Length: 202
Image 1: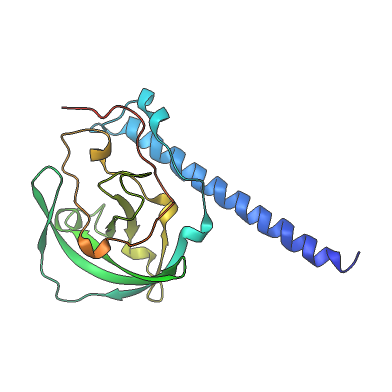
Image 2: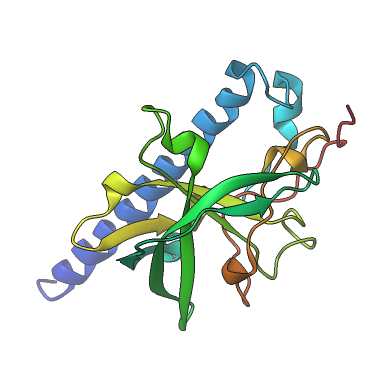
């Protein structure tokens, strides 16, 4: 019996971790949903929230990435699905391993948001992957990060928090098109799924 105790303890610990992580993601998603109701320019109303769906929380899609801060990057125009563009600059390259693949992505900063003290640390991680137009929104998904989260040249990236742009729910929004350098050649079965409601037209 004594030999079984460490194994039993390990099983309970791992199970508790899985539960607590799932609870953490559940809280994050509930807050995400409530933001649609609070925001004045939101494309969704309370009755639309039942059409939001997500993959089950999976901690294997939470990775610790190496960060390489980029210097002297020029401002460029990131196109939007509305045919316009917004000014961004490349802030950093991140490198991590996911599903036995080494991936490199780019973090961006919005020029306009950087000028706002509230969002001056905001980092933008738009991406596409092989679930797009099948299980997830065809235009790709986004993750929000902060430069304050970079510690010892590393940052945690959690694809469970990947979300759809407003364009997934309604016309009339200027959603950035994820640059090709963030086109992942694997399925990211994590984060938000395709909206099951009727897309709105403005």
